[in-house]
Amino acid sequence: MSALARPPITGRLPWLRRLVAVGWLVAVAAAPLFLISSNVVWAFGAPGLYTYGFQKYRISQEMLMPSEELERIAAGLRAYWTSDADHLNVTYAGRPFFNQREIVHLRDVKAIVQGVDALRWTTLGVLLAWVAMTAVLLKVASTREFARAAAWGGGLTLGIVAFCGVVFLFAFDQAFLLFHRLSFANDFWQLTCPGDNLVCLFPQGFWFDATMFIVVATVVEAALLLVGGLAALRVLRRVQFLRPGAVPGSR
Image (cartoon, rainbow, N blue to C red; front, side, top):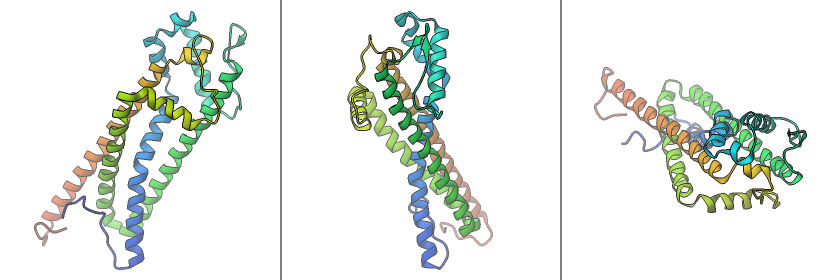
């Protein structure tokens, strides 16, 4: 039987078998949610990503603003995502940098970012609870369970992100528009440049690049989970085979 055919079920009690099986499925499903949400939150808070976008799209030249001022405004945005402030208040040349329409949209974006952050912590809590439960219930056998879940979780994440990556690569504009229509209850996201500084600061190309960074980071992490889980399973099979009295081909 393949090592990845199904999660190992140990113990004689029916409720224990069901609990272990359900916990395994929940852990595997939580893995892609945790990895993707973590990378989304990372992208919104990564200074280097903002600087990269400003330099690539020549925002300083396009908006006739010093790079230092762009970085200051970007720092204000990053602080806003995790703050308790209801509205963003950043200025340039003594005047508000964003208009009222942009400020309302940024408040909506902040709600999404904080929702994704809550998902990250929730899925992390679920994974840690599953690890603790499995270690208590399965004891020594939990090592195989962890390795199998890591392999399946990594494989599931790779499948999801690979599909999304292809969609973003060939139909990003349509996916970006659909996301906004589904995520926002108003039309304040319909901004133009020139006129609205937010879309001048972050053109659509910036969002494509940020999305690809998230995809690549998630793919690397998922691949490490998959390869690490499979390697651990192979080691465990070898240890079991070398154990005195082990029957070749047995689990």
